[in-house]
Image (tube, rainbow, N blue to C red):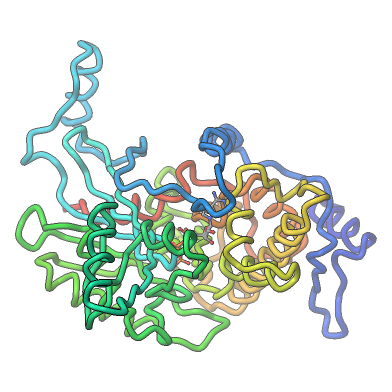
Length: 440
Ligand SMILES: Nc1ncnc2c1ncn2[C@@H]1O[C@H](COP(=O)(O)OP(=O)(O)OP(=O)(O)O)[C@@H](O)[C@H]1O
Ligand SMILES: [Mg+2]
C-alpha cells in the first residue's frame, strides 16, 4: 500500500472520508484535525510571512481597521531583468553604489490587480524593482442634511486628507478612509465589487471603481503604455458572467490613455511564482470574493476557473454561527494571533473561523478535483506538479497545514509535489501582471 492509500485508510477510519452509494468520496471538513503529513518545502518563506505579520502594530481599539493602509509598498521580488541591467546592478553592489536606472531603461507597463477587497497596482521604478500601491476597494456615502452641513463635511474630509468625490449632492469617501470612518460610525462600507466582478446590486459601482482605478494607476508614462489587469475566470458554482465586467474595465482604462488587456488572475499568479518550474503547476489565488484556479502546462493555462466562496464567505458563515457581524469576524480573522490549526478554545469566533476555513478548503479542492477530472484539456503530467497559493485568505497562520489536510482527504486527479505559499501573498498577482505588462 502506498503512502497515499495508507493516509486515506486512516482518514476513513476516523470518519473524515467516506464513500457514498455512487462511489464518490465525501469529506467531513469539521473532522479535519489530523497532524500534518507533509510539509511544503518552502517553510522558510512561510516563516518569513509569519514574522512579517507578527511585526504588525498591536491593535489599540477593536474598531481599528484590520489591515493598515499602504499606499506605496516596497517588496523585494523575483523579477525578470535584462542581463546587462543585472550586470550593472551587481557592479554597483560591489562598489556600494546605489543602483538607479536611466529613465528610458526602466521597463514600462503597469500590472493592476482589480480585487473585491483591494486594488493593487505594480510598476517598475528606477531601482529596477517593482513597487506596489494598494487601495481598499470600498466607499461610504455621506449625505449632507443642509448646505451648511455640506460645507462642514467637506472641510472635515479635506482636513483629514481623505480621498472623496462629490456627486449628486453627496460625498463619496473612498478606500482606507472610508473603512476607518465606517468603523468610527458603526456603519458598514459599500463595495463596488462583489465576488470578483462589478456588483450588480450597487448602483454606484462603476463610477466609484473608475475613480479608485484612476487614482491608483495615475497617468501612463508613455502614450499607450501597456496595462494588464486581473480578471476572474468563469465561476463553476455561480451564475454570472465576468466578460461584461472585463469589457467595462478595459474600455475605462483605455480612456485613461493606456493600452489595457485582461489576464486571468490565477495565470498572473503563476507568472509570478512558477517561472522556475517552466510555468507548470497549479496556481490558486485565495481572495475575498473568489478562489481563482489555473492549471498550467509549460506556460499554457490549460484549465482555468473560479469558485465563489472565499474570505467573505468565511466572514459571513462564522458571523451567522456566532451571532456577530461579518466585520468583527473579519477583524478576528486578520488578527496575527489567530492560528487555524490551534484556535483559542476560549474564543468562539476563532473556533468558528477555523471550522469554516476547513469547510472552505475542502469545498474548493473538491470542486477543483471534479472540474479537473471532467476536463478534456487536462494534460497527463509525467511528474507530480507544484501547487502555489496566494491572496489575503491564505495569510492566517496554519493555512498551509489546513490546506495539506484538506488535500490529503480529497481525491485529486493530478499528483501534487509540494504546496508552496507565495512569499508576498498580497502582491503576487500584481507582480505577475506587472511582469507580463513589461514584456516587450
Ligand atoms: N492578514 C490577514 N489574515 C487573514 N486574512 C486576511 C489578511 N489580510 C487580508 N485577509 C483577507 O483576505 C481577503 C482579501 O484578500 P485579497 O486582497 O487577496 O482579495 P481580492 O483580490 O481583493 O479579492 P478577489 O480576488 O476575490 O476579487 C479578505 O477576506 C481579507 O479579510
Ligand atoms: Mg484577488
